[in-house]
Length: 459
Image (cartoon, rainbow, N blue to C red; front, top):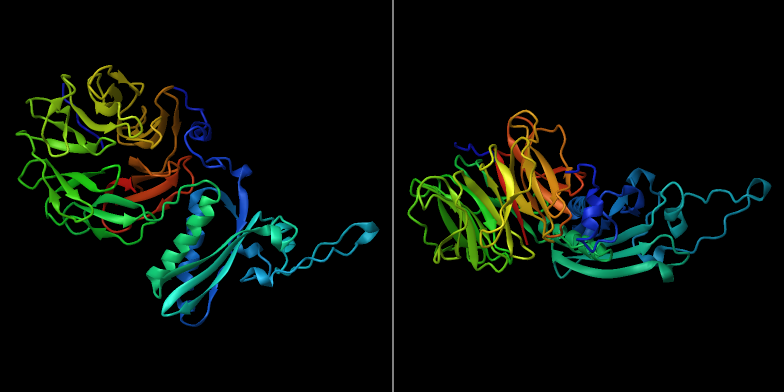
């Protein structure tokens, strides 16, 4: 978002920055070091087969979007695909070829060597099948280490999963199996997380929600007025946003558990907007004109009481975000030095310093869950309006540019796993929501209807 204000080093590797913040064994951005995984299509028996297209698409997408593996193309797979470990046989020694050299193994698929050797060259193999029991979809699934010489040592885990006998059930068991694969490699699973965003597809801007992969999109608010700038409490129980219910922007908070509106006393002002929760969910920081004149940063209890002003600049201060790890510092956007830039201050308003260089315009700061990095939108001296997504190490001011030459990219928000970012981008006539890995790869479009902006990723 660009605000109208009134009167480092760019070569650092994102993988190196993330290495100290995540427990993931395979770093983002080092494709050459990623293990290769083969995920052949699973088959279903009886009524389960009709849902296998959804299942296979979801499982593949979950593993691919994690960024943990190199996905082996299905066109490289052997003709025969085992559905269960019992179908895997020990590979006989390869017959001798010319001059004593072993010849290539036959193209089969029922031996681990058929998957670990050329042309597949997979480190891991996911197999399984589905059936129907008691009117439920049942998934039997295994993850194997294809590089092991025998089945006894190859099985990493095997598990049974249950879901409803419909598309939703197929998605569920695919997510569950995919999550268990990711957990084997230290990654946090995103299944069950939500993305809240603003959409105008019904004629007015409302808050919408969707699953992390773009499925299950539905409206959360129906105020039929401008409702925008969502923020979710860290524990995921409350959502705050800005709405023009009474003609001027004011803060509204709802319970995500019941959907009901919660008490928040707005100050008498021409604007109360852009709320953001502290890590304990007990306080809200926001921008307000409560003192008259320029919008400034304030903090209050989650019900609006105990208001305290944090900034006193003769310029607009907006978009405050509290460090989710420490709760001790805030990043925000200010025009106090000219064009809008990203600043940092202590939670009490002291020790204010500019983070961005002063080039171009910067906006939309978002803290990494680990509390060291921020993602933000920046023109960095390029033509006005051409925002791109950057990541900065707050301590060192080192930055990495993630989007390049693909429309206007804004409003980044970190996923709970700290490895993914959701953002909005105008790459045509409308603005849509996208996700990507934190190195800028694996870009995936989630929305297609109307204009969709200001996403926030929640547990």
